[in-house]
Length: 228
Image 1 (cartoon, rainbow, N blue to C red):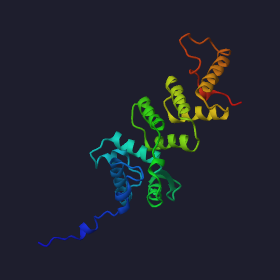
Image 2: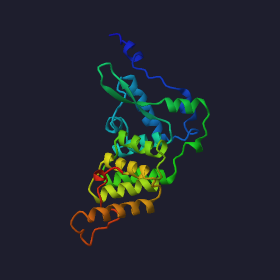
Image 3: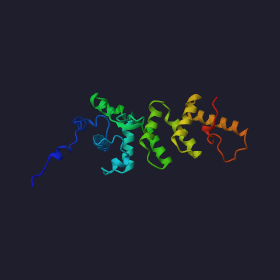
Image 4: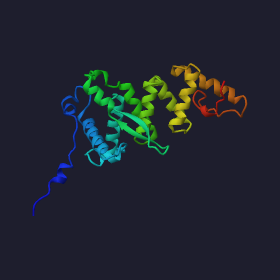
């Protein structure tokens, strides 16, 4: 029986030869390269937003390693999460590798793409406090805080501490804290603590005394704070 090889020809995946040749020069490691190749494969199969679990299923890596690689690719500005409307008024999210191709074909220096140790640690800290790997959207949210809003890393860490102490482990709460601090011109951890202490003192005058073990610099509800 004659073998039909036509199916094999349709099962080919094409990608940039330059990616294999120059991935080290733009700051990628081998794990990130494999994740990118899997993303390209998923794109060809019309899955534009695979989960870390989807990707991990076709590698020797677990979900956490894949999630970390996705995070690092976004930190290095080699990938982004974009939105598109599907025609029914529903917005779909997808991974865009456009930043990667720009880096490959514009000879961007590798040392300019490497995140600092401090910015890497903030992602790990969120994962420790949440007790799980971060979702791509959560990773993108932190990147926005760092790159677009330009919040200091130590201030983000303090906002996370506030949320943890109040058992408000969600990104909306942390974002509201950071917005309140920005509105009040607060840019340092010391200033944030002082603002919390002041708010607590004002609140305690209108309510019952706070227990002695409560730290007035951190135990307050930012979402309940009235606007000035």
